[in-house]
Length: 114
Image (cartoon, rainbow, N blue to C red; front, side, top):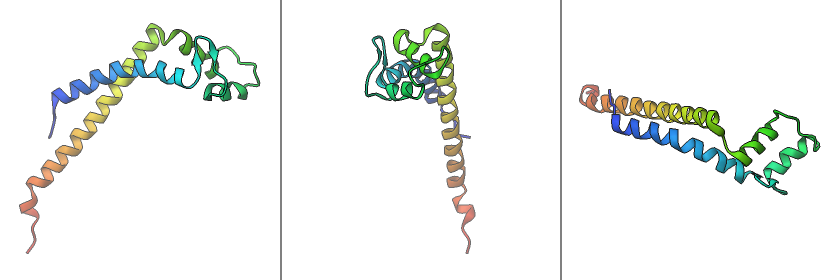
């Protein structure tokens, strides 16, 4: 079986670091920011679906909160976990595919038919 522990470790750490950084950037790019929801953005379109009355705990309220103050400690920890788990799963899948390809290549002479 193919396994590259260095690549796996780097990917898991990268996922744990990248996702908590990417989420607030994406939320800000969607129009949720410290000054409120920016007109003409996806965030404004989402707010319009609420008819202007955004309730506490709604997706729009949660995104606006992230846009203003970020993820917070628990949100950052959860995003780090999800980022690490996701990249770890992807690397494990790639390792499995590479292992199967290596096994198939090494058996190529066995598979020749006359």
